[in-house]
Structures are given as structure tokens and as C-alpha cells.
Length: 118
Image 1 (tube, one colour):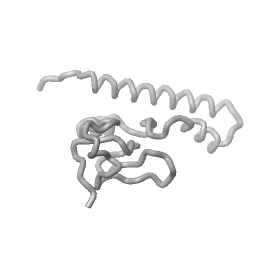
Image 2: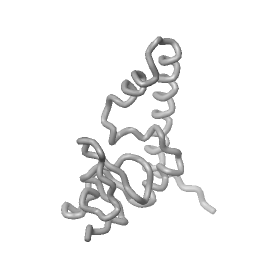
Image 3: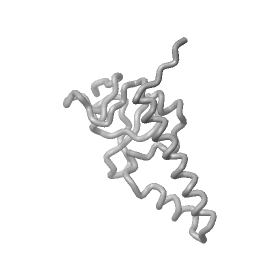
Image 4: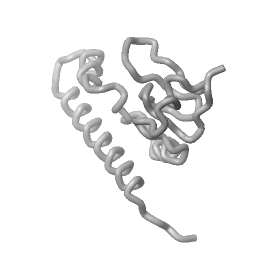
């Protein structure tokens, strides 16, 4: 079996490594401070929640890639926000989830399994 490397795999590995490094840094800083666990969690997620892939395994990141998930739909009328498989956010944030894979999903994103709402 041939092993091929692609730019997409490289980017996913970089994202996973970055999340690991950031997560490790947060653990070290929270060990050295007197902050409560809740305060450090709020700091960790102060960025865009739709970009937080820190809790996903490499297999989950690969699954997103295999399903063709992209953050901006190439088909304007086919977006995750109007997909049957989209799970809307419980908050006012513009990312939700998907029944097919774990992790945050932008409303304006798309994957090859897009299905119209009925």
C-alpha cells in the first residue's frame, strides 16, 4: 500500500501539534497559579470557539477531512446551517456541530454529505 502525504494532512498535523503545545502550556500555567479551574478554562477558550480543535483526536480530524468539510461552502445555497445533519449552537455563537463528526462546525461551512432540511 502506498503512503501518500498531502498538504491537507500536513495542515491537520500542524493544527493537532499546535493544539497539543497550547494545551500543554495552559496546563503548566494553571499549575503555577492560584486561579480556579473554571477561570483557566475560560482563558483557554477566549478565542473563536469554532477554531478550537484541541479536544479532537487525529482520527476525528481525519474523519472531518474525509467527509470534505470546508469552512466556507463552495455552493452558496448548500451550507451547514441549512443541512439536516447540522446541530445548532445552544449559545449565540455562529458555530454548532454535526451528527457525522465531532468538533465545532461553522454555519456557512460545507461537507460532501450535505443534506437539505425537510
